[in-house]
Length: 147
Image 1 (cartoon, rainbow, N blue to C red):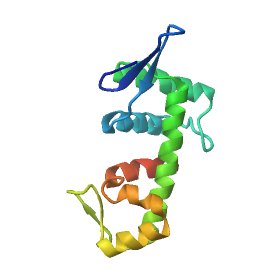
Image 2: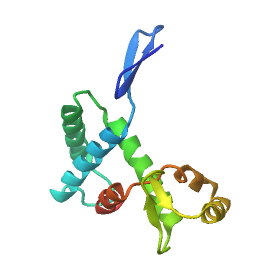
Image 3: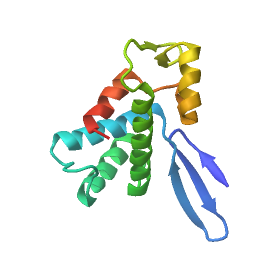
Image 4: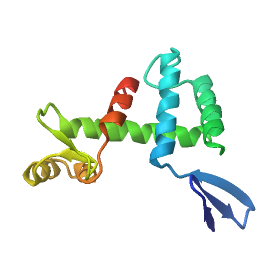
């Protein structure tokens, strides 16, 4: 059984009597998470390619406070890993191409249908970006994190 609210789905295991909140990420919660990660980086708390236990604990506390709902480290770590994968795929898609604009209506790269078909033929995973990409604003934030 599950019950939804704006940021979480509550799942209940009736047999064991346990409850767990599953995070549902929307654009606002992702932006808050990214901003908090950037804040940690700016404070010098991201020495390598990942956060340590103390930094993750601080992120859990800060995002829970900011959103008003509890988060767990694993939820944040999973989102971090997914963002990292998406960022790499997005960078590969765009490559070193020049002259690509941003289509506000489609919220993705402004390119011809032929360009998209060639890219998707080369890597089918690119299709997910054809109708919703990573905005230039979010691109800049992700670049700061050097995912």
